[in-house]
Length: 21
Image 1 (spheres, rainbow, N blue to C red):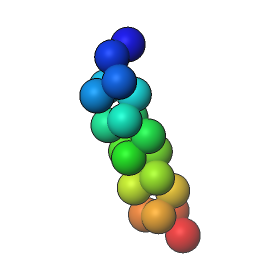
Image 2: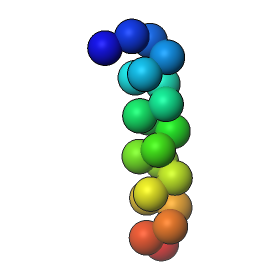
Image 3: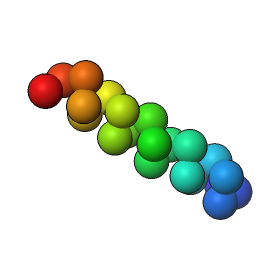
């Protein structure tokens, strides 16, 4: 996985977590 991909994944996870709360 490239750095860009891992970065985007991290942002997506944070975004999903925000939606849940």
